Length: 389
Image (tube, rainbow, N blue to C red; front, top):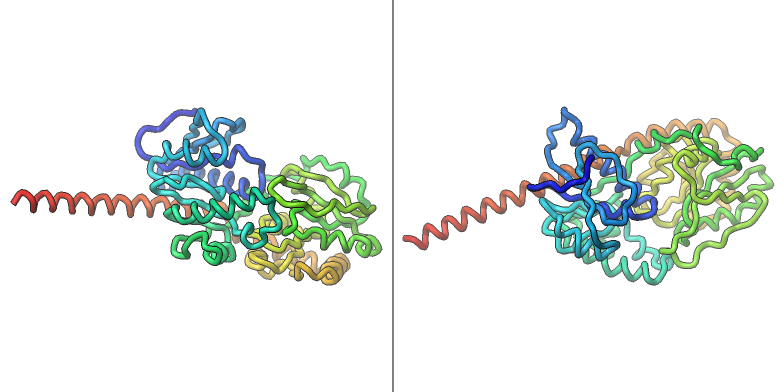
């Protein structure tokens, strides 16, 4: 859609996520915006809330939207853009989907994905930890409504004083983006060279991702005829990362695109996900949607995501990780059962449904503000009438 400003009232979506590297948070924002646009374009849907996606000047690649207008500002970047530029484009309110947004917005809905910097602060760099532990409670206090991605995250936001329980609603991640991926377009030379089954280890080398517990099982897995393929890498927001393991059966492919990730999921014996804390945990959901069996940590939100479609292991029990992986490798019936259950489980998580929750909240806020304004006008009118008697 052509870039221009809309006169009149509309909700503003904070587009700063488009200037950031793609992680789970940015994936969430992309998919919610796309789903909102599809809802607004649906002729059978009564939703009539106009929206505009406001971007900082550094954004080069813009999403293709049919109903949500895109507007790019001329100055600012990062948190200062959130606080000093975006409020001028508030309109009916601001929707921020990436943890932060303008604290001075009159009507602000923000998605705070997790409280991980409070739960495992040692996993993050000092600067990042300090920023999040300072700013998240401020944003949570000032926002009218706070979304998060799981009941576990909601409980943690309350426990760590980020916001009050009555402000929170849960709008989980969805699975539909995985259905657009095509493994046939993938280019991963390693997959053509492997002659033995592999487990996929996906995630950054941050301490809370706990991938070292799997590296410690590499020798035993090698003896059992199992390779380990590691996708992902380090981010500057984290503290000292897990050392990169080096063994003949450990293969690092680095950051991969969506089609490559589809190929990795589809070819894997299973996804292993030993994380110690997650606000949601989108890799297990993506794996389930692709029919890839999952062995996951039993920590945080992960059981809520996987239900009975996943095998669970204590994140610190290396022996159990090894035995569960080897046991699954030798049980084709169990793999087939997990694959089928996983697809069914993944279908329960929908971007469109979560987008509808946001739309409901926007309309509810607008309605309550309109009612408040009407009551104020009536009160003022009565006051004028009384003073004239």
